[in-house]
Image (tube, rainbow, N blue to C red):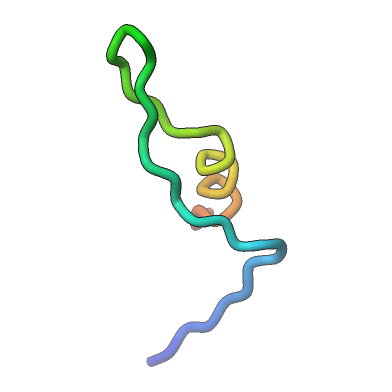
Length: 42
């Protein structure tokens, strides 16, 4: 069984986590936004 889907817009590679000066890791905004666009919703 094959499933095909199309995501509108330009593809964005997943960026690596960034660190704050206090050592906390966070995901860059461009990656978060794109992941929210691609996420499967019921």
